[in-house]
Image (cartoon, rainbow, N blue to C red):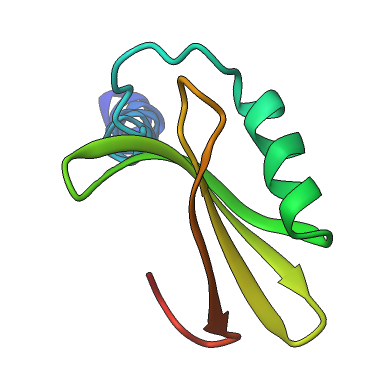
Length: 97
């Protein structure tokens, strides 16, 4: 009976640990919401958002959006406080950030 209880609890503990490790870094509060920043990014680069994150890059926090436009990825960085576009570049479909 103890073995069954252990086998039931063990996967739940492992799942909890992996979820905790996968949680993104919160960062400082932003004046813009992710949805507001996404609208700004999609105005600059119409398409479908493939990936979005709030990240620290080169010492500054920003919203980053990878927007699929056909076979290419358009990366748009949005300042989380001003809404200014701080990156506007293209990646090949298989590239990693």
